[in-house]
Length: 137
Image 1 (tube, rainbow, N blue to C red):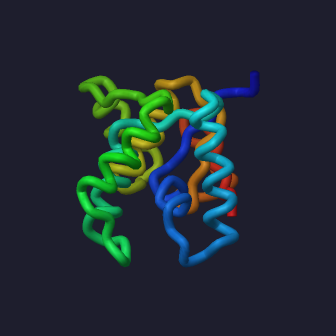
Image 2 (tube, rainbow, N blue to C red):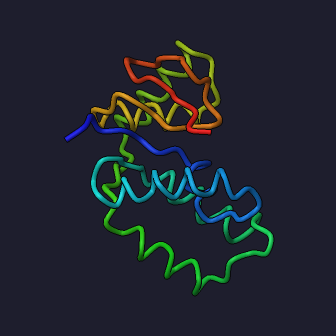
């Protein structure tokens, strides 16, 4: 089995966004890998994903539609946020100067033992606490 990887919110959103079919295909492949157990997410990623689909996606997804989507993502290993992870995110903020919620992504990936974060938002090629970022697009 390959090294555990982490999926950032933006990639999960692209898997349901039809605006850019190329990005959607790439994102869907990563989500399929997550469903197979090769990639993890965090509770934060799910919360940001749900908020975006409910409030920012055009057309917006209904709550019942979102519930079905969340159920389909249920098999993905999800890292829970706790006080230690929040503390580590604060440390990441101090070291790297990133937005706190990006630091929480880094802390969750580190906690899961990931070697890679798939993200369009973080700096591709950068390594944070030993976790490298790669832009899948």
